[in-house]
Length: 405
Image 1 (cartoon, rainbow, N blue to C red):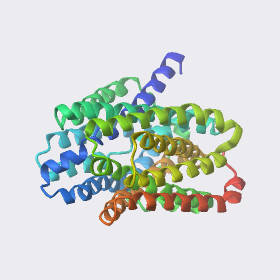
Image 2 (image 1 turned 90 degrees about the horizontal axis):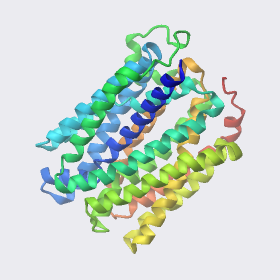
Image 3 (image 1 turned 135 degrees about the vertical axis):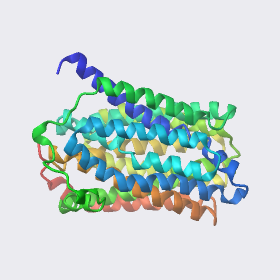
Image 4 (image 1 turned 60 degrees about the vertical axis):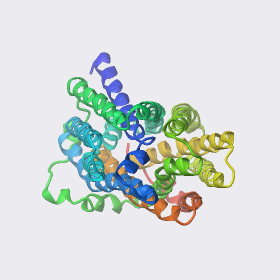
């Protein structure tokens, strides 16, 4: 592969990651207001926001391991392009709107085809050495952070002009990226590393886990991932509603806060992780990052009682620095647990674990929110500490695992 072609592929991978996070975050400042447009009972807005986010995650849980196995069989390129096209259709349906049902339908379509990030991670695993993956996953996280930074800013500004504008913007840029990928993306999965055959039984999302869970270290890492992302989505799924109700913020205010989150993600995953990974290693980064994250989330909930704006931004920065250390380190440990021909499956299974946590997290947060507006954050912090305890207990097993080269 010549250098120009390689550079184009990397650019496409980075742009795709950027647009994935932009598309997700661009709707966050407006989604409570979109729901409120179709639901007259203000008390149910938090519940429906949680259900919409969870419907996407549940569909991704069903589809991600299957898409991962399909990419192991047929290659990364066709699966990635199909996933991007599904996102375009999902954004358009949400933008057309007209009812809560259309909002749900858009998220369901996007979720069922939502294999783009797992396929991107498998693609990067194909073209990098195992020892370098943590650094490259950190780079993907930094680019995702940039998308998460730009998305809410665009969503907040354009959503103030028209609530559906962010959705059509996300659809347009994702469609352009899909067309670009059709021409510049080269297949990364070599024929000798492909799954030999694909059977109807592989369409069972639970069956896709069966072989992977025979690897002890993956049981542990998937369990830690579930708990950690369950906690993260309790926080994320409720933050816009909490900001609207408790802090009396509008779309612009929420968008600006998430803009800062994106800046922190770029710093944490793109710079800090790259510097610390060779010195401390994956395991120590998970531990340190989880502690910062848990403490930060707990302090977010404390804003119910006092919320000076500098304190709000300070704790958001703290918890996102921690999150930026945990995510690439965990992804690296999971990727290095299997050989080349299983990278699609393990990436899909990992995305599926995160997806089911995204089903449970927002719903749990919405349930707790009814009793006290700070409860989702107290609960989220406790769960992060549980994930950390499980991870620490199994450190010997994690370190003794022989990573395939």
